[in-house]
Image (cartoon, rainbow, N blue to C red):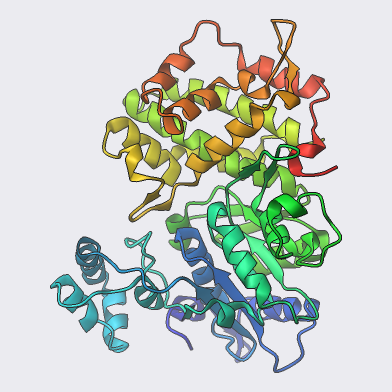
Length: 478
């Protein structure tokens, strides 16, 4: 039995003297059948990218299925060579000694001494090294189960059946272009489950956004995105094999077994069996066909979470101010999704909950708070030590640049003229001026909310719902 699976095993009971895995092994066997795995042929699952959510996701799978070592192999890839700084090593040592179960585990694995030496400055630890012991560099305070870590990308993915993309959208293209080189000789392509929440913009030829699942699909064709944006005949990982999973999830809370839910979106062939496979008592996974809306909302929520953090910090957590902001930002999100999907999923249920929790608590909201308080500077970039990539920053730029294109003009509700869509999104505009152009201070977001000429958020929603706004070209579709 692998370390880290102890809690799961203890949860099993015996019926008539036979161990009952609460249906866990049956779920694994069912997925193996769906994927056509023969007896003795391991189901190979690999996570690509070891940020907080990517690491937790791999740990959830390891905790749930890792004991069936003759049926499934669960690994995670991350780049080698990332050193752990002295202050982080000292904090990590404190975390270890505050958790008796973790301390005992490390001693049993003869791995404790290196953390003592690192605390004293006598040794340098590396991110891939500590991940093997269950410590994610972006989430030190939440120890995970030990993980099988691979630092060679080719070794990790070449024969994988399921690849879980835990990379930021800004890194997805580069890594999956590299991965595609190792899949040239494959007879069948793997299933890819993307956890990425970010959006890229392409403004050449026809302005459009590129979602993480599209990035993966196009990167697998080993051609620049500008060339394959409107090409569907080149071989690669088919879009039906690429799914998205998202929901109102804070990684550390999920691993600590706070009740959570998520949706897996994509082709029915794969999403239904995967939803059943991923479902756990504290982590309920539903399936949904609307991949576009969920991915776009996944990027948009990070945009507006930064603003939510700013408003919270600048108003001393004023509930009234935050609710005003919530009304305006959700109306902008609805407006934007109506440009991108003909019949978008309504901002309700899990989609609304995902937006709510991200605005309430998450790295993008935290980043907005720190910027507003002056505890972080924009000059520090959007990759923050201990937090990872703040994906909302690049998404602000992507959505603004895309929606400011004159070719996408929409009717203004009062001025009887056509305007670029961004003109009807005042919060997105001000976030762009604060974060990208740096023309305004964070306080400007409160001025935008208090503008007497600001329309009722309902007006924006009505415009989106009553006009033929849908632009297929925005998703790179003819």
